[in-house]
Length: 249
Image 1: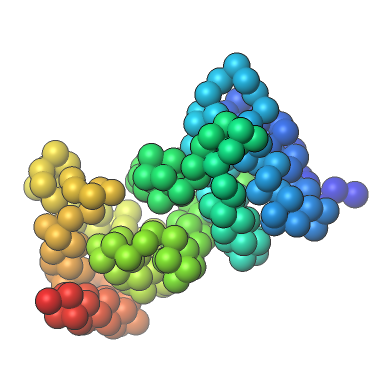
Image 2: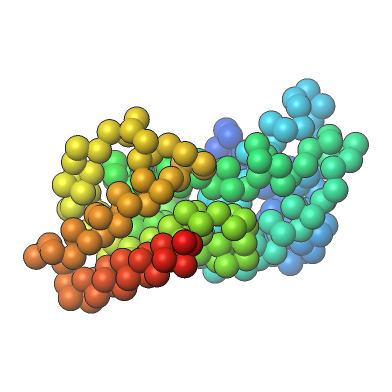
């Protein structure tokens, strides 16, 4: 009888963007057949000479992030694997790829996946797999995974990225976040031009964007539609943001 991990791997192999060999390696690692080092060496190995080695980077990082979104119990294993992969030295075997460079780093793909997941949340898009995970659970899983990544400094020491993640998790991960976001999302984003400086900057973050969300969290506290527990979480988040701002000076 197939394990839940094996079932998930079989399903995702049917999707055109994945590579069967890479999914098999990930599955073997998650089932305990391979160590993190062995799996990292297999995943970074430059096998398909028809394409540049760099083309596989985004695909593999995305594979790990999709797994994190749908399989919350595997987060620690995935983090150990990412650590092992970023420790691989660029060589002929890896096609010369440095998995820690800005353009190939996990942080860059994380940002793209975050945007994609946010779009799915807003459009109420559900995956059509047998192991379908509801939008609300995917959202929670992704932020829980992101918070762990921030704890291990996968995003470096960037003030906006790390602090922003911690605020998102504290304020939105609990108390049915999708109900709040779906209900108040339109009013929260009213008048916000996505081409404005609030939405550009290093890795998609900026001090103006930080202020934008701090203002929104403060405004949301006044809403009659939220419960007192959520209101307290929002207060805690804005206080934490204020402390972070003062510490930065």
